[in-house]
Image 1 (tube, rainbow, N blue to C red):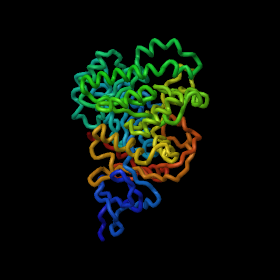
Image 2: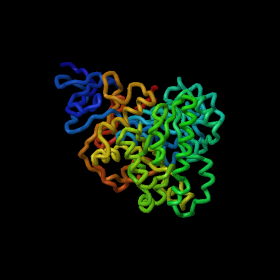
Image 3: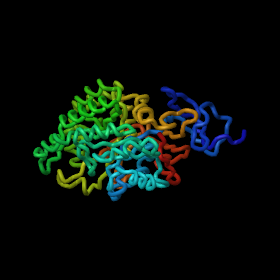
Image 4: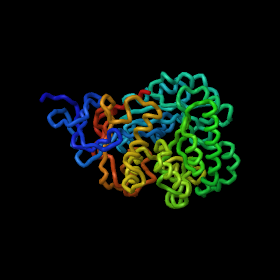
Amino acid sequence: MSESFDLIIKNGLCFIEGNLKKVDIGVKGSLIKEIKELSIFKASQIIDAKNLLVLPGAIDTQVHFREPGATDSEDLYSGSRGAIMGGITSVFEMPNTNPPTSSKKEFFKKINLASNRMFCNYAFYFGATSNNSKELRELDSLEGCCGVKLFVGSSTGNLLVKNESDIAKVFSSSSKIVSVHSEDEEILNLRKRLIEKGKVLSHLIWRNEESAISSTRRIIRIAERLNKKAHILHVTTKKEIDLLSKHKGNITFEITPQHLSLTSPSCYEKLGTLAQMNPPIRTKDHQDKLWYAIKHNIADIIGSDHAPHLKKNKEKLYPESPSGMPGVQTLVPIMLDHVNRKKLTIEQFVRYLSENPAKIFNIKSKGLIKKGYEADLTIIDMDKVVKIDNAKMESKCKWSPFHGVKVKGFPVITIVNGEIKMKNGKIIGKPGGKPLKF
């Protein structure tokens, strides 16, 4: 039979319509053209996925690739290499760069910077300020814009909207979903006196549970009053889970692998300031509640909050050390290891990393293995055991909080827009990522 496909993935267990099915996938150009037994067909390339799982491409909804402004620790090129090495096919990149992505001028600059330089697909957040409400009304037609990022508590960068009237203005003006870094700035300022020089454990005493719950309570109240969609990023506390579980209409939220995998005080004793992030890694009772939200499908998304800094800066004396840790390359392996440990199912893994990001943010033709959809696929070996190694990190920061951790379950092939971009730990070809369409 004459050549019919550019790529055939055969013999794999494919995640289709909520189940793993042994079926072949035929790809033509960037699209999935056929899902059936394809042994009599030919293709330019054939992947034998025997004993492997073929999943919809994993989407990391929270990365900081630091370009422009801090490209010594990361840029769009290096960050996207880390993404595909870790089985990620698309990323949402954050606006707290220098200058911030809070105007159309800066947004278009970032789109241009990404063109032909990113291996994965990409979308960028538009940063909210207290005075850019006019531009927030005009984001619907902006290709490659996933939503509005609102910092109501200070973190890396200078994007901060702390007054309730200004926060409400952001929500009422936004034509897109508003994703929120939810810590109460007033509480953070009042508690700064609790910071102890040289003691990173004081980080979670300063940025306490109340600073998170107070802020999240306010965001829910504003979003529901204005009938707007809010997405709460990196949720960390028991009380937030209880509250968010009762407000699932307009409100969605995500959790990071770090908060699901590390606990205080042990992570601070082992990693020191490398474990410092905002909101902080908390005690096990909070982590147990996060897992409750994962297990019972109360949470919506798992995102890495990849926030790299050079090690020499991270190792400065607290609080001079910056907050944030890398994670785009380890998101999939860490969560697959949790699947193997029976902490969540493979169905939940796909829901949190593929289906829900596409559904909540209305990404066109992504998040499912379906005829007519883009061929973004993450192929994994659930039996592959790997020790995470700083030397193998593609990030310019060259470290991971999970260095030395042995994981079972690993991405072995990453396919982006129908093209193999990573195979068995090697990056293939040139950057071919495209802006996501919504």
